[in-house]
Amino acid sequence: MEEKNAKKVMLSGIQPSGDLTLGSYLGAIKNWSERAEIFDCYYFMADLHSITVRQNPADLRRRTIEQLAQYIACGLDPEKNTLFIQSHVPAHTQLGWVLNCYTMFGELSRMTQFKDKSAKNAENINGGLFTYPALMAADILLYQPDYVPVGSDQKQHVELCRDVATRFNNIYGDVFKIPEPYIPKVGARVMSLVSPENKMSKSDKDPNGTVYLLDQPDVIMRKFKKAVTDSDTERCVHYDLANKPGVSNLMSIYSACTGKTFEEIEAEFEGQGYGAFKPAVGEAVVETLRPIREESERLLKDKAYLETVYKAGADKASYIANKTLRKVYKKVGFVVK
Ligand code: ATP
Ligand code: LTN
Image: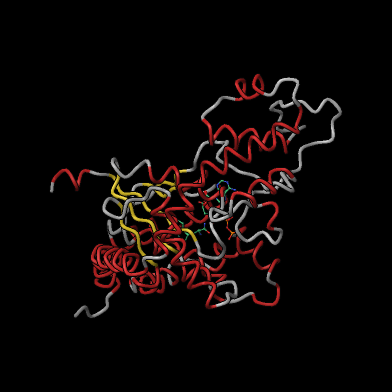
């Protein structure tokens, strides 16, 4: 018991707003799966957040379950990690409401994700999109985590969460642990295969730029063969992020999948040009993703097992979350039953 309490807590979520990608895997989930021994880990499908942008209900349901299967297939063992669906733990919306009342209009107005998403969805700038960070703060603070592993785009939200938690603690005493964002090292940023200046993203409109975890091998190979490289005449495989972003991105992917260094990759393809390099990267990705796709497909045939996982996850998460919620309700002056 003592040892369990000594473990640091880690928590993160991904919105099931698109199918998971090679970027989600290399940038996030792969690293999460290596931490289960050291940390007490909570990972969830952020379905409540995803409806801030209009979703097709059948797709959202399918993707939420697929995301769970993919988390497990990527190595998140449900025995060692708490995996759950955000909407199954009502404490998220309950604390979300309370924190809305401790988050300032000005703070929310400054969030770059709000500005970006408002520009992209001008016809649906809804209240949820605006107050998204208060719900995200609740997601985090309920579990009193030490670290929140997120991409650099989410750092601003974790900082706002820290500000809100500090504000609350200053009024009511030490209720919340102040969490640290945990940003992966540079290089864990996989770029689009068709526009390497943009991040590979699950909601990208052009599927050719994005490799999905469930893509079949022939689809992956086609995407890599068509990947943008660069227009210089020497066509050599050399890492140069500023001048050769396409080739550099492919090298990063190849390195992440094979464990080879950039020097080793340059030596391997010396004098061969991109014609040999691009299919080699494709094959390395196919082999990296093959066990994940096969295991996901197997798990998706066993809906009963996935149901036991998300039900057990929701029970465990609710137990922890409700403890924090109860404390908060008492502090703000609600009659607690
Ligand atoms: P959306 O397109 O719906 O905004 P996204 O594909 O950009 O989503 P997120 O859901 O914002 O992905 O990211 C989930 C996690 O996956 C983030 O914490 C981030 O670290 C990681 N991630 C996503 N895409 C990449 C990428 N291309 N490279 C590295 N990490 C990534
Ligand atoms: N906003 C995040 C998803 C997310 C999250 C969280 C991440 C929702 N709640 C709590 C970490 C902790 C995103 O869009 N990637």
